Picture 1 (cartoon, rainbow, N blue to C red):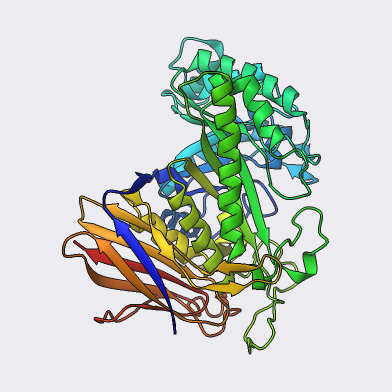
Picture 2 (spheres, rainbow, N blue to C red):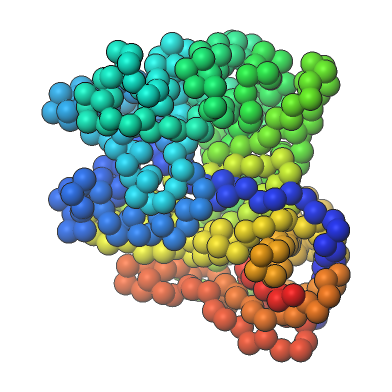
Length: 509
């Protein structure tokens, strides 16, 4: 069996882990909002019309923020459509996803729901068809104490105290040709600057996220010039630059122009490397502008949309993966996430932890479908991808340590030899623990993990593992516990990471 060696020293740190790395993103897409979140006819609906079963599922993963209302949706959304008595709200055509928007779920209902799931609000303003003045008015409605027409309107609508939302996104994917009100980098940089200026005039304490590149592949030729030029216009007014990235290894979607499959299942070790390279490139663009402006301020990264677009159709050569569950007709919003997707989730979370000196926010895209499946008229269950996210959020409180990892390599299909073990470590001084998160992205080989921890009396006390001999197996309404993590018996030997496994190793100091 091959061996990987992980070396950790208390003196070599990355950064304190920001809770908001474990955030999510919700958009009014398909039945996500109307049916899965808000459904007053559902048996579990509470007095506000929210499904309590979904709230409980969200509570298990939310340590950070929930970004809303978009996504592409926000570039045609006008926030005043969603306030006041519901019976008086306009019903409009929604032009991003070609549907009807009833405006039942407005920014106030969203904030109520986010509070119930125990997360922080992260509101996006419309800079596609909207204006800087509209964005500033939204901040005034949500955050201003009172005594103005707009803040008093909030009080009239039944909310005496301000919501005090501190995290705001300046639009969404404005580099995309699909975006309503798409702009050049210069045009967007200028409107972001003006919106930020007006929004901060209302509330100087807010944090602002500008739109960066929404991918780093060949379908986005403006990367990374977009990021540099945007920041040259608004650097002094913003705190974060966003990046978006979806990874797809579905052989049926190789020619898809929205989510092209740049990778095959044999390229899995390259995917976290691609994310790390994306983060480094955007950080470099931001630091270039910082130098040009002789600034002392550092722009941090918000990966405020990320996800994995997997496939049930994968069948690598020489492997007997026979167990699979194909989606039923009409289940577009209930992706079946398998162990491959879960391993990639873990690998990307490991990347964010290892880059936590620059990545302060990361939003997994639409957890309904991404991490748990929800029937708009029925129940819900945790998908395989739920567990790496939930465990990373639960066990990474503290300081990320800079790991030195010597991993064996494998031959990928398109990217040459790549190391296939990925790992991150978090030191929790209060609990006197080190937690190592490790993923094996090989399809075929187990690996022994030797940890050299330069802490006195570090003892492995717990090993949690998500693994299955059938990586295409999924949880379902009929069998919601088919793929779940298990406790592995700790011995005096080195832990073994099976193929496509996610592992949590806890060391007591």
